Length: 170
Image (cartoon, rainbow, N blue to C red):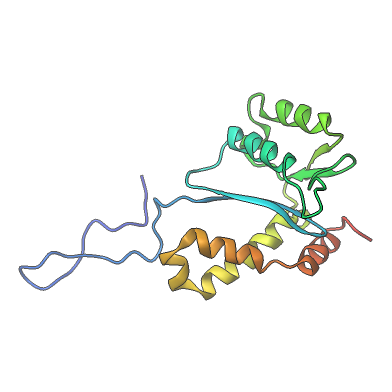
């Protein structure tokens, strides 16, 4: 197994060696994001790796989200586009997700393989990563708060531009 963690170190004679990890390879936070041309409609942060069940739960939660006027964030006629991550197509997950969304009149589609330029998530995550790198100390001390702040940096204009750049809007 390969990790970024060292097993040896240097210190003064008679003192224990220690290392301050810049990036912990064992730290996992999953950010699920629902961007649309009008902004980030919903997100959640999980303190574990993502999987198919989490994906289903994310959409169950997102389907119950409303805006300040009481309108559903997801509504009939919407199109959900996912990348080709393995668990998006996992055993029964794709079928259950497609059925769940169809009950609300929402269509599920997948990006063509190897076309990240069509993925608005990549644009959103790129902006988030820029913010997190810019505020490295804050991110290290309070990762979930930093992620929330990074998401608020993704403006409505950004999301509209991402959707247009990826070809979803004319």
